[in-house]
Amino acid sequence: MNQEFRPPNLALTTVGLSLATFMQVLDTTIANVSLPTIAGNLGVSVNQSTWVITSFAVSMAISLPLTGFLTRRFGEVRMFILSTLLFSIASFLCGIAQSMPMLILFRAIQGAVAGPMYPVTQSLLISIYPPAKRGMALALLAMVTVVAPIAGPILGGWITDNYSWPWIFFINVPIGIFASMVVANQMKGRKDVIMRPKMDYVGLITLIVGVGALQIVLDKGNDEDWFNSQFIVITAIVSAIALAVFLIWELTDKEPIVNLRLLRHHNFRIGTIALVLAYAAFFAIGLLVPQWLQRNMGYTSTWAGFAAAPLGILPVMLTFIVGKYASRTDMRLLASCAFLVMGATCFMRSEFFLQIDFWHVAGVQLFQGLGVALFFMPVTTILLSDLQPNEIAAGGGLATFLRTLGASFSASLTTFLWDHRAIVHHAHLTEHFTPYDNSAQTTLQAAGVSAQASNGFLEQMITQQAFQISFNEVFHLLGWVFFSLIVVVWLARPPFGAKSGPAADH
Image 1 (cartoon, rainbow, N blue to C red):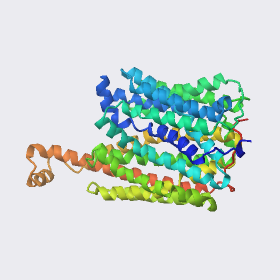
Image 2 (spheres, rainbow, N blue to C red):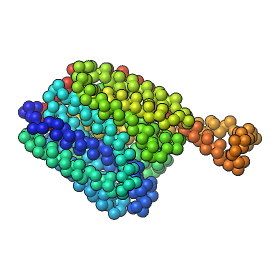
Image 3 (cartoon, rainbow, N blue to C red):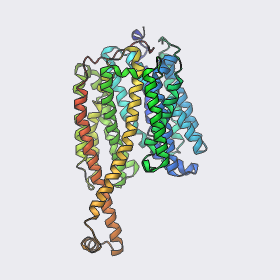
Image 4 (tube, rainbow, N blue to C red):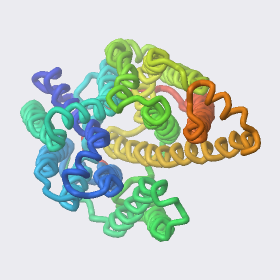
């Protein structure tokens, strides 16, 4: 039985599994700050280069819910090794790409093989640790999930500035080879139950079309002015039809490629709702703060990264403490504390202003890290707690897929709200200035601003204030989202001990 298997060196196995996950999560953000350089080198516009991000996100979103099917077909250990090696090869191909279409294709392949890596890692970690120490394993994985997206833009910017953009992909190659070799060696004694499930072609095709089209709508909606764009309208209709067929088919087919019936488990359902909504709000914070620092506060991308980076300090410091002692506490209480802290930091940001200094911004980020340290492990433990051992990989894949989709919705909605509310506030603020009221221009000229420059300077000030008010409003809303999740998480029912067992699913 797999639950009795322990690798010869548990620490080394954990390092191998965690390194692969760190590499995969890092690659979701590492290319973001390098897009202008990549666009310039490959001779395309910056807008076209965003497909480097979109292609990765679309492919990963499609492959994530297939994790259960793939682990049944290949086994968890083999699936991990295969995914990690293919990810390394795809990363190398991204680095040697000579044109934008080639880079987009290789990024799509990279995203497709990346999908199963996180949920399979999660399932393997649970299976190799004894019950008393599984909290430690999940806490470690949570730390990786938090730190990697923060490190991505900083590392990506440093590599691009000091070397060249292909190296943001080349660094994955030795890491991926090392991680796969370690896990292959340490886990070779583990026997996976491998099945030959029937291929659900209808489910697969509708999943690819529906999720792919939806991800494109969410990624490109703001750039294309949403439903004023014929491309967005057609893509949204295609997505809606395909996803409707997918849901009906998967819920009625005897051997679905994505097991949506896992949502029948009460704690999995409640935990997944809490995870998706909390991660969506958390993702919105990570998206808005750096943009605000650069757009409103005049920070460079590097300094914006430094201001956001303290978020990862407390999760790193508290990982082993949370992992060791969390099992003695009600997971709902830990999650409630996390949501309370994260909600409080959102309300703090809703009071930010244009003259606020670096240390106040970094201090709030540091405090939020306490909430993040207490968030992922308890919520993950809750959602996995009533799954059968052979459902953990599939459940992890489905929950991570929904979490990823929630982050995409969050990114689009947050950016839209920030821009839209800024336009509204800009209109309200300009109502107080007319060509017949020269008091503002007179004040500016007295401060040394020339008559010719005063109107432009005034417009800039109004725009900055409009975006600041909008920023504050969005964070006020996010604060209430976190507070409301405290109610949701208490709908879960103990006990919350994650199970382990054979890798087969059904």
